[in-house]
Image 1 (cartoon, rainbow, N blue to C red):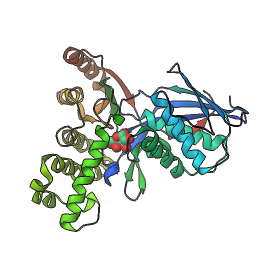
Image 2: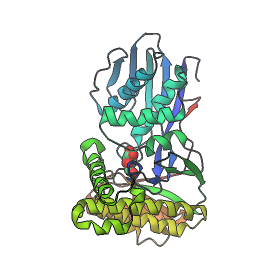
Image 3: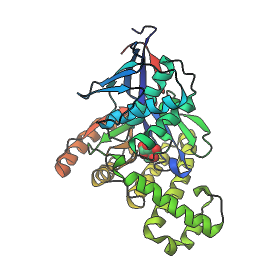
Image 4: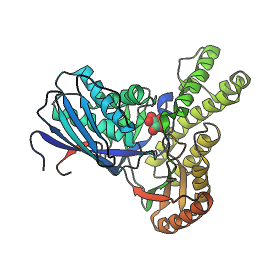
Length: 374
Ligand code: GLA
């Protein structure tokens, strides 16, 4: 049970039906918060500046001094220190606190355990110390933490999905205007199944930021050449084709993927609203193809899982999800076909890569909120 000085926060991971690597490219995304989450128990500890944070999955305890925030010694420390650092810039109301973290969100699997940690903590401290920050403040704090303390120049999708998630709904977010609408998830007998390659990614390794830079370079050239507003939304396939040589194969492919994916997401949102799941599935396959061949953020293990999904008649669509280079595929599959498919997929995956496949089903769930039991 919680007391006045103690609160418990439930902070979810996220899935994204379609619209990958286009949140930072002025595109649209279609994410949802999920039922895998991080729990944070937060207590005001009476010290003026000493914070103690421990995560049940890790042995190290992070002790932070609010007046002198050092760099973290483990990856997850930087999310905590980043959130504290960003809050310190906005308020002088923080004082010492203790935090215990428990997680069921798989790390490095493309379901955004990192935004769950950063946004969950920001949300919790906002409640604990009555800071009065808005949901968008918390989303931006989560994003700045990734940019400035972790080093991944991510878009806004993960933090947005974490805070704004609504049970039974995807969210169509316009990453340019930040306007969004909830789209009810009516999947009938179909389910969302995640297959985890158990190949872990670390986006701060650099490839993520390189993709972002390549898109910016490509867009610079397009803007100069066609005198258009600086957004991929103004770029047509004809424009792109006409300067293929100038862009070179890499920038051409990156930009082609972006403008195609922007269109695919808008179409997928319409098809989802009309209940046309077969068409959504086809778009998922197209998205994967683009991510693998043009954006080059997939890997052999993800491609293998998407390829074998095509042999399953009751599976409508499959694609890599999140930043890529490992993590999960998202599959839209009939509920009666799940057990058989998972069994076959696990056997052939093990045979090909000697790695155990894991899986879970999920559904759109509530965003970060206060709950009463840890
Ligand atoms: C990561 C980033 C997001 C987004 C996805 C790819 O999850 O944090 O902002 O770019 O990759 O769609």
